[in-house]
Structure formats: structure tokens, C-alpha cells
Image (cartoon, rainbow, N blue to C red; front, side, top):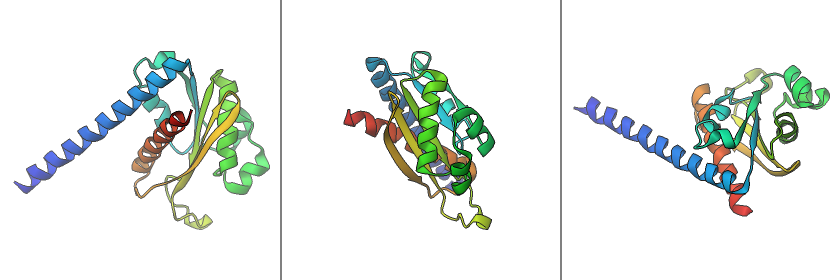
Length: 179
């Protein structure tokens, strides 16, 4: 009996989270379509999950131009123009790195809006990274218009990545409400 109750609660929780995500993606889609905003994504810590999530938007083909996952400094330098010394100084996890990624993905994918996220999905004790965090940036019309530091209480890397994606999408909607 207890197992069935817990299982039903878990199923309900998943449905509620899915509905919230679907509603949020619908809002995002309507906003972008109404203003002819195209989106490009540059991500690292979320390893493609943000791109996957945005591809689930209604009419994504008319909004989402695609993305690039640059998981190490070499790829960020080569494809997104990150300065090697700057990236090395912070392990590519900084507000500046997210800003460069957001700006460059606009150019790379011919998008009005660039969304970028970089951070840590698991602790790196040898670098004294215990508290998981990430940085996200939004570029619009070739200018940085919003940055935010993300934190999570999740523990498994997959759950951390999902949490960051939810936070990034929420921050996108927060930015849109300010326009």
C-alpha cells in the first residue's frame, strides 16, 4: 500500500513537472513567434539538454535555429571565439564565458537571440568546487541583455542538468516580461 502511494505520488509529480514545462515552452514559443525572434543555443554543462528541451516547443522549427555543445576549452575557443587565457583562468565557468558564448552563437546560427549556459554538474574537489553553480547569458540583437548565476540543490549530474535547463528557461521568460 505504501509503495503504491509513493509510486502514484511520483507519477503525479512527473506529470505536474511535465505540464509546467509544456506550458512554459508554449509561452516561450508564442512570445518568440509574435516578435519574430529566432533562438540559438551554446551550452556546456547541460550537454545538449537545453537544445533538446527547446526543440520540444510548439512550432520550434520557426523559432529554434539549433545549437552547439562545447564541452571543453578547446571547442569553446575554436567554435565560439572564447579567449584561451580567460577560459583557462576560470575553467570556462564564468559570467564572461557565458556572455561570449551567447554572443557568438547568434553569429554562428544567425539568430536574434543567443542563450548560453556553462557551469558544474558535479563537484570538482581538486579545484575546490563543492557548491554546484552555472552562469547563463542571453544575447539579443548582438548585445548581452541578461545574465544570471544558477545554483542547484540536486546531486546527480543528470538532475543538475535538468534543473539548470528549467532555470534557464525561467530566466528567459523573466527577461521577456521586462521587454
